[in-house]
Length: 205
Image 1 (tube, one colour):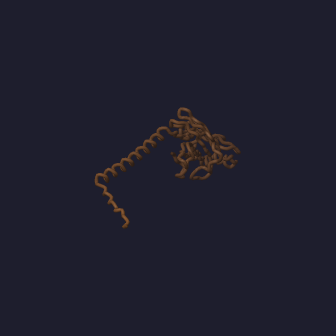
Image 2: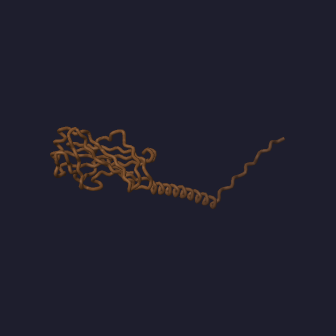
Image 3: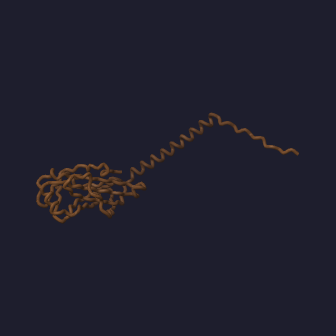
């Protein structure tokens, strides 16, 4: 008895209408995905915190921008944190002040550990401060003569860790002491600052 063999049934070829329908459906899916991602991005942008670290001169210029100094004591500068977003930010804050008799491209490395601060949306400000290394007798003499530079830098990280989609803002300011006027034995009226030269020393998310 002869074996029966299945006769292959030819597959119907896709019509132009089916091809067009498939293309339209694919394009529609892509548009929907893009639209969803854009909306998600807009939602995050409209609700996320925006933390900005500011020093005295950022807010008031040279008005009352006086920096006290003394031998064997660090320079101290205040940091004001403003949150222009809608949600509070759980922030880590690093700050440092550097005095140098010669030009630098940025302040010294940030000390550890950082301050841990909750920054509420404006009008509520948060405060921190930055310190330098203690001044030597030679440093004090140089400051009194208007010699050298003062560098102020702050780094703020908030949200998730930066590598996981959080946010980071870094600012660095340079004060040239030869532009300061009326320096007294223990007080420097700070001039208007410049951005630090190193392009990586200023960044905002």
